[in-house]
Length: 467
Image 1 (cartoon, rainbow, N blue to C red):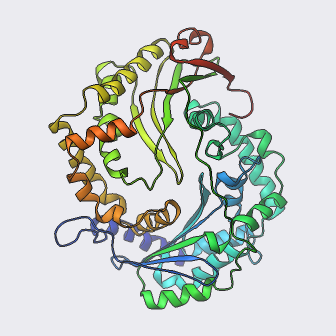
Image 2 (cartoon, rainbow, N blue to C red; image 1 turned 90 degrees about the horizontal axis):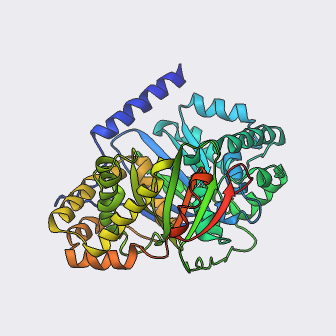
């Protein structure tokens, strides 16, 4: 009965969160990050505490420097290690751990990204004393049970096989590898069959020991609690988490600059359509122009009424969607225009996408278009940081990507202050339109001769292992 009751309350609270969002608007109506406290434990763990009393929930988000950039040649290792944290602990078998968390109505997850691994828990604040010891157990004493890992690895290998049947699931991995080359930003998060197959439990244990250390990690706790009491609780909970023998002082080099336009053609013989990405190197997340860049990208391809979607979908009928985006990392990032179309109209779609990008540079923006994008962005951003989970994710992003609350606190001013002349400078500086990289998955026999005009062509078979 308690499980059903807790889950019902949590669902009600989540509903209420939408109706009564966190108060992130100040008296002047400007979006502002709620107050929080940040401190560091003796072992190096960074802690963020933010009180939010609208609903009786607490969200705990932990991030560790265990992302795919640390994979080395063992592609997929970071991803498997993060997921394996929930395969059991020294105290609880996997089934016991899941039963306890489910009984308490805890919403939980674990995953890895390119640059970090994350654990997340959301639960009723009245269950704090029951849930926190479990969190500690998962963080500090994962068992990496060999039997459970073998079952999980088999499922992962099956998923890797199936992924290549759907080009949309793998084109980003091909694009990153092609764009970044041997740089760690080109590491495929899920790995591939020949890299995942040899991995054993001992590999996970070694990776965990090296990368799940308090000195490079952070925990953000947001929800219904009192900061003074929570500070004491967190200090007691993680104070015996031992720091690593030596801190990881690895500094990632910048990706190699792009020397010229190139094309990667991934052949899928049975393809009836072509998935494509037009890419170049982009920005890091801490870039001071991050917000103006997002405003302008909204116009280019960041919303349904964007130029790219209007031209490729609405006007030309070549696709169901066309987008552009900046994928920003800690030290660099990428810019991409992406879409898909029938094989016969691939060149038409690619040329039209390039025309739209060139239009941005040659004609620029008018006041009406810029004002529309500014209003859209101002309406979209506040709802992204309303719930406890969203706020906890923002705090850990600040830790990982080296930016602070000024991103939020000056958000509206930066949007409102974006002028046409400044927008022109942003476009020229950050929106690439030369030395572009073309990545496409489709039927090579019908494409190879037509795409040579975009640059030197490299071909791969989608059935070949890796990216």
